[in-house]
Image (cartoon, rainbow, N blue to C red; front, side, top):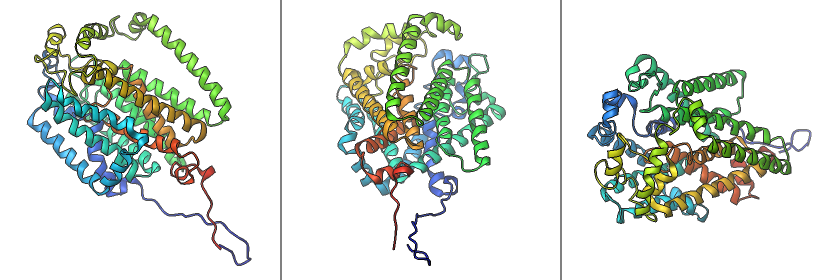
Amino acid sequence: MRTKTGKRQSVKATHSVQPIFNLVLGWALLVPTLFFVARGTFSFDRVQSNNLLEYDAGTIMETGAWSIYYRGEQMLMYLVVCLLIWPVLPSIFKEIARPRNYWLILLPIWGGLSMIWSQDPMKTLLNIIPMFLLTCFGTYLTVRLSPERQVEFFLFAGVVTLAANYLLVIFYPSAGIAQFDGKGAWQGLFVHKNQCGILMTYMLIPAFCVPPSTLLKRLGLVVYVIADLFIIVMTQSRTGWLTASCCLVFLTMAKLSWKFAWKEKVLIAVCVLAIVSLISLLCFAYMSELAILLGKDATLTGRTNIWATLWPVLGKRPYVGYGYSAFWLGMRGESATLNLAFTNLANAENAVMQMWLELGGVGVVIMCAGILISCKHVWWSALHRPSNYTLWCSANVFLTVLALVDGDKIMFPNTIEWALYVASFISLSTNARNPKSQKVAARFGLDEVRPTYQLG
């Protein structure tokens, strides 16, 4: 475009953007998102199980997970998901079917095939269908929302989750505070303090990936981060503390790396990897001492005993496992022996072992291959296209990697972690597979390579 003086002037498209909480879509997305953030089980719905008697008896899962109320709640949430994704379903399928995403979608497909050899085919079916819908929901986020909108939405969801946690702790402590150990650990919206610690770490990440445009917004983000970290501390969850600490270190290092050239980034990464490897070896060598230092016993609250007991069980079906979500059947199947030895045991307390039990060694290989590919995409984005959005995606992948060692689960039903991993995997693979695309660069908020359009 030319001015009256005849000089050429660049024109950039500008438009006012409504905050996500002013949009109907934002509130519609919030409903199932909160359900997935709470892993499909709200503390106020399971308050009758928040006591020592129920917890020791191992009935906390039976009183909520398979009740008619829970099934109705789950069906309602997935109905909302179906209504949301239906208008863009062809685009979702097209995105999932891209060759670069094969390792991502292969894991749910293998989970579906496990119905053939599952200990409980019906339970596998009832869990794998929601898992496919959850995978579509994660893909929907990348198809329907721009990168900036995705981060903004999860910050909005984090604010709502944070407010719900404080409200339950203050006004409904019989749900918001764990009553079964007598230590007053906060659990807020969640049914366990470890879940609260891990999930609130996920909700912490967007605050570091939203550039504040005003001083008031910057102050609001600071208050949000402090309030979130305070809840994590009050959970008394050592897993939550370590997860949040590692995540903060990752975010800090990632942002600092933006100031260096790519060769310097490589050198720093090698040094950091060496330090992390050394620390990991020391932690493994002195695991018992560290556990005692953190207020736990030498068995990590019985985890090492569980892992030792699981090895013979893994050897019975080493390649295909016992079926997706079909190992822990109480006093039925292979889990019966374990339940005689351990009361209230419903997971392996280790993501790799949990996947091995359900989908066998094949499932573990697929899971690890997908994570390695996503890590490669994180590395590429850090070297060539760092941005606030790729930082958010990279942090989600980082927490998925941590899940391999912190007792969390991967591809677990009704969990926001899987949806975030799917969205991050797809976005980072798109970024890495289109290194020369100005369109992709513009999507990821990279102003330095965004084209300037001129008219006239």
